[in-house]
Image 1 (cartoon, each protein chain N blue to C red):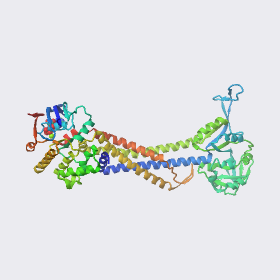
Image 2 (cartoon, protein in one colour; image 1 turned 180 degrees about the horizontal axis):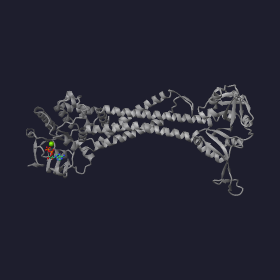
Image 3 (cartoon, each protein chain N blue to C red; image 1 turned 45 degrees about the vertical axis):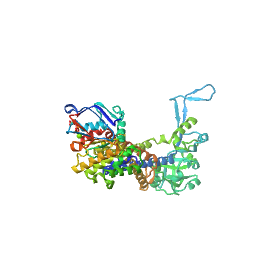
Image 4 (cartoon, protein in one colour; image 1 turned 90 degrees about the horizontal axis):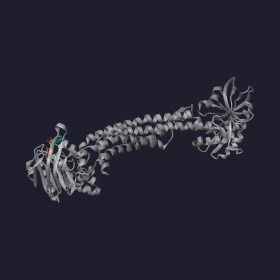
Length: 412
Length: 224
Ligand SMILES: Nc1ncnc2c1ncn2[C@@H]1O[C@H](COP(=O)(O)OP(=O)(O)O)[C@@H](O)[C@H]1O
Ligand SMILES: [Mg+2]
């Protein structure tokens, strides 16, 4: 074994108890850091999965009309929109044309036109305000997780009945609706009869409380809207490419196109603030361990002053002495990170099996965790930096000791 | 060529009012294989001189040659390497590292020098401990040895890298008469046997007289 490492190990042994305290702190700090990150990131990614399953990755909404254009050379066919002179016309006028145009984008895996409106649901002598969504079932299941959101009844029954209805679970509860029940929807003063084919639950309160799905032709008559669509919902190969794709699509088809990252900005910010603040809070455990470690190392330097002098006299350089103390920190942090990561993995596993009922922004019956190696790397980097700084100053102090004056001080 | 030569060494110690001119122009030469004593009253500058010779301290004036190498321009690392390869120290207090066994203490300078394999270091350390009469106590920690035994371990440690010069500052100062005699005999016998020079500070005139040459110090100078 390298002599410096050997000496470092033995010096550590001289302050076993204090070092075990610092070690424990690092183990807990690293473990808690990873566990809280796994959990907050877990909830975040589960939220994203939920929201994508409900509202899709990209939505093409309002048509953009430039009120003034510059002809870029006569007859060239190119027109440049002048800034500040853009008008948004709500809705998509020719959804089929746009769906066709999207075929030029291989990254777009599915596109489904949707009509959205307002209607009163009437059943059991009660009324309830809903937001009906008219969908094309075949394509809509490709741009959402509707299939897995069904908790009662079936999409098949819905598909077979032109006046089938899929009702949000909270509406069903409030209105005491069962699959098979007959209900009325009224939007323009001409109530129409529908049959509840299925109930869905997304976990997102607002959606489960106000949304009902029906077929596109049915909503056209319900809302008296013979053509067009409110928006087109898209699915992409890569959810992270949504902003770039949305920008490209917007340019090509002249409709305002919004990626999910922009649509859900508020919640995404809440999650990222939560993640950062928990990282900072937990890091204080590591900082405090580093402080304890600094103290212990200073004590060892004081304790071992004579030994340092004798090591210097027998040929150990200042750098050797400095390394001996840096190594002590290094050994503790290495062991701490390994044990901490092990504890973190166990803790994360255990946490993911703790039952907890969550509804509101998503639906889960246990803690959601995300296994991400970067959480472990981040914890290891933080612990290593803290301990390196904590070891640096005692090490420098030890290296600066003058062997001559120490030996002189201890002899007569 | 002489082993060590010093010329006109001056050293001041302390600051302000307590500043002392501890060495006032010391010159002498040490030849290989001979034993030297530095004798003198307490406070005459013996230790100060020894630390300068051992390159643990730097003179305010004057020069020190180790072999043919003048040391005033050496870096701290070069001085340290010179100590490691050519010098062995024994102090009044043994300074054993108490987390290490006797054998491991003796191996520390060898580990730093790094010329021998682990097994060879172990064998050599055991030989040295045998030479100082501690063959059966190689596995003891410093705390499990008597004062005289600890000082003998320190001697074995000083000999670890076959230094050409052993520097000892009152190595027997802390020992009773019998042990003092034994430690001194050991040091001077080993030095003679191995052709190593020994420079020993002692205010015990009887022991000093048993060296090949005695330097008498008074108020920072060597008396003729
Ligand atoms: N750190 C110091 N500060 C001031 N004076 C010192 C210091 N160390 C030693 N001295 C003085 O230097 C002189 C020489 O000391 P030293 O070499 O230790 O003497 P010796 O070893 O012969 O007893 C003494 O007068 C002592 O008081
Ligand atoms: Mg002295």
